[in-house]
Length: 190
Image 1 (cartoon, helix red, strand yellow):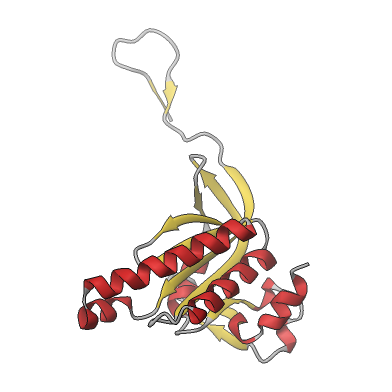
Image 2 (cartoon, rainbow, N blue to C red):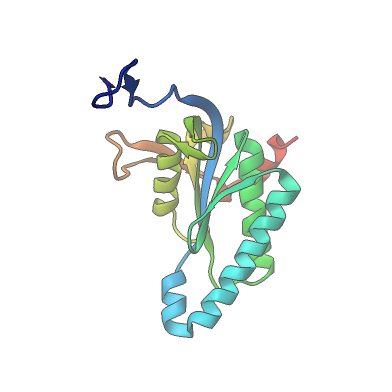
């Protein structure tokens, strides 16, 4: 649709968005499980200390692995990587370091690889991002949910959960808990 300014002489301006730039990326959402309850029971200072340690660990692992924090989401983070194995390895390392630091709250996460729109140069929009967020929501404490197809060999492991229904998705997603098989992820991270 083209619109011209009233009284303007010249070509009409288009309000249509410029062509989208598509990229293939892997996304993970990592959250502290039970953050609201911790704040309510132990107080804001305790919750903020937990969050501060979590963020420090995420930054440290991101710097060491090339994984980028796309967004901080209160008690969680959206992470972006170029390919699944390095991102999944980074998430598992975040899990390990949080356990080593004896955080009061366990983590839960969801990860997906897919083609998305790079929007305005610094944001990612698309089904893969939404699916990663829904998988993180569905994961319980200590779980890292991803589609079974994310890594080769997952389908033959104890990590397979099977199809699950997720809000906003018409078809069930065949899911695995990759936190159960860190050795497989690490063996692929060359």
